[in-house]
Length: 224
Image 1 (cartoon, rainbow, N blue to C red):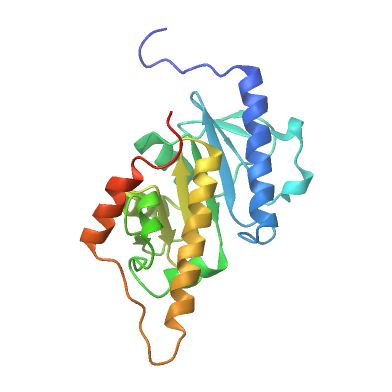
Image 2: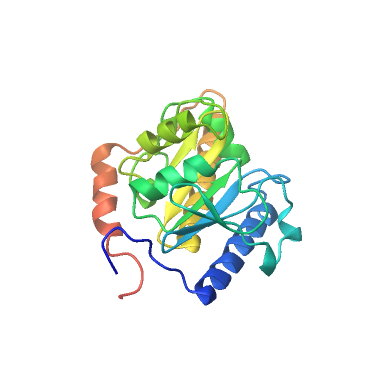
């Protein structure tokens, strides 16, 4: 294959990944991270990005409803229109090694996005997202401006908040991206809970503490 030519995606890989995209989208609804058709999920297979469609309830999606675009945004698979947040997904795929993206309107994370420019380091699991999570400035949903803001907030991170909007996380797999979304929502909930105690302010972890955790976290989990 010549350099620069599209990477082909095997039909079996497309089918399997689309099933994972739909399952992840349904999970986000079941876990209360999205309401209705808000939020969206995508995964990359070669140079094809499989993405949830715009305005279609996830429980209606089946194997024949796959929606795919190339990295330039041209639709190469399916009849349904892709999510309106496609520019943001494509920007992340073009700029990072992400293989999966989860975007939600999680309640606590969205609330925190209206209060701060960076999620306070109330728990050491911030290192799971690369460090303190930034809040991207507000921009109209589905716009190139929002995509640009999100990319800046993601610099060196695997997740960010979108002001007055929600969360955006990515990973090497859909499970990894989803787990980061769940961790981010949980950290935001912990911070809001702690700050609600009258007359008290929560203690936060400084850069030295987070670096200490980051060094240990690199060996977390099972070998291999």
